[in-house]
Length: 250
Image (cartoon, rainbow, N blue to C red; front, side, top):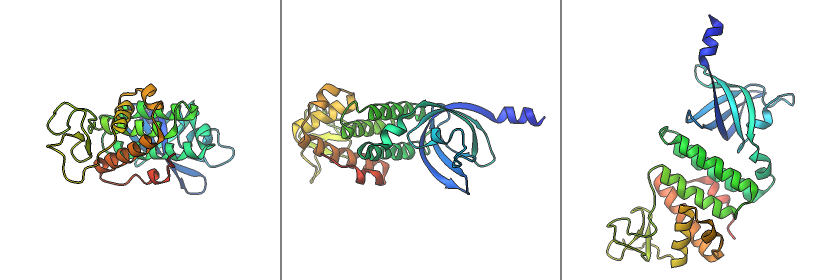
């Protein structure tokens, strides 16, 4: 009977490690974003011992195939098979590390209560971490593209062409986070930023995945875009993404 009970409580899923913290002398609590079960917190027993067979597979930014057992308060990780060893390449480079930290912090906050979009968030985050570990594009561009897509999945897709308030066809010369992006002259609230046209084009490229256009952008427009992205994300999250403060911009 106990074996049947154990089997009924056991399940497998792919997951990316968002965060870890110590528990007792040898254990860790792992915050995971899974492919099919949303965000969850699980205990990894003995993972801090040097003899642990899967400790390295449960570090931040790693992607693994996990076997878990449902517990009374926290699930328990009983097996971990590495699927994406992005953590080593990211941890070896400070710029990549802080960008990955900002992405996983954002993912954690966007999925802590919303389970309906967790699969899309999982796929987006894994893709962004893979791109970051390979150095496929500039770290800041990968971050800003991830942030724009993540808030879009959460239901706050920005507009960088038509007016976000009245729908008047763009391009427009102002941006307002509270209204949802680009705004026309008539809808523009006082004090709204007026980004350069090249910055708005870059933002549209980052949202749509036009990497040729994004990679060709100049640093001055990347910096302006980064400020708008950070403001937009934190407005809709209604809280600060602390890791963004550590990201160094060119």
